[in-house]
Length: 535
Image (cartoon, rainbow, N blue to C red; front, side, top):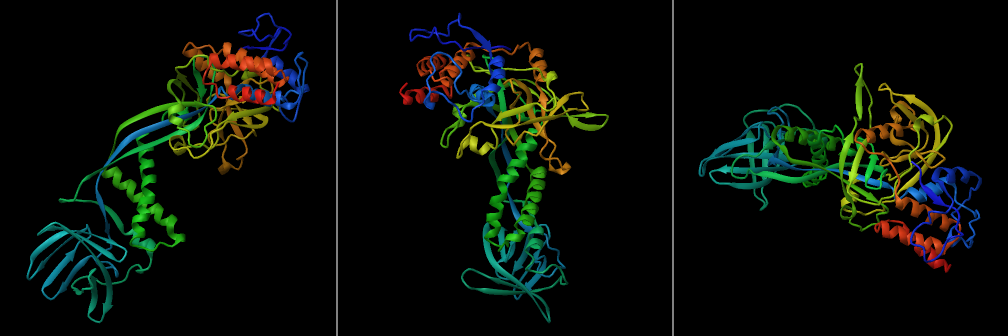
């Protein structure tokens, strides 16, 4: 795909409405290939104090900087968001301590005029000489006993309890909020068990038990999960290349939402338990794991995920704190997706991790594509992407969303079991960079940043990219030919004028770019730079 960039400004005039078609033009690749002789430590544009209206080569930025400035509007941030409703029956915490464990309340207890029995499945029942029979459910939370009566009337009572041993056996002491104290003698149980001050053991004995009776209800919550990554526009009418895993290809969406629900519930559980237990910092992780497991098991048995949907949003440019990114983003539709993982001879391997997303836009900037079959070991490569930006910031932004550049070399070509010749590089591919373009020194995308080997195999710094030719195959399969548009030609010419210090022409061309693409995220910045320079 070849685009034209003007390098001769002798025909420039304020009355021109477009890039003159009779100017000498060269492809982006030719401009950047010659840029290796013009390396500069900073961008020398209209703010650099140099004016070069004759078209001679001023201190042009490096090829990497040129490509970054040219393409950062075509490199987009992608959010794939799964939404659903989690529905589950209300539950209560019940201690599963057995009747024979010291410190456990399960068993039968007696005081003059009253006998009560606590069962291991969370029920209690008894008889009072004056009030008659009673029953309900209970839970043990720290040193608090919560009694939820279902008969003879519905009521909830919390009392502090303590179990001690004496010569006559075990004694249950109940203390009410008004200071009254009642003592019950065990008529069953006894023996050793976990120490009362072993908080992890106490939490481990808790179970989430479905509530029954008049107080039972259905709980409901909206749950959202998802993935974020990078993509790049390859046609002016909005075809975007990214990774299949960025659009959640092959994922169990209900499982994603369930995992998110458990994660969201964790903090709530810890706060609730802190009302009854003093949790040492060193035990919080163990207790958290216990609670997550118990919650997951309860929901798998009793709950459900309903109304599951998946949406994709595409955003280009910079998102500043306070921006409503979801409103700014374009809805996207996945037109084709590959597989993230495939099995070859029973062994898992990385699959055709490519996806094509379509947004309904016109006159978009595009990325120039190269030929991944020509990539050689030792070549310099660089990656543009949106690292470290998650779902929470997308809906409630509290940090800046901005594309960044990482650089390295091609360290090897590795053939996966699927036959795909992946590009191995030491250029950083951080969380969020997945799906971003990997460029060669000519400013052409020759790969798609995809995955890392990971620290577990001892080669954390090695990353891999899918070859761009695989993405081109995907595009051809849906009858799409990657190409540039009029905006690319105008914007490239505007940047060239800006770099050479010809602000008059640069401003005119950047304004023409804004007519073609009113939402261009960077053209206005260059115009303001030029105007501040007074050129």
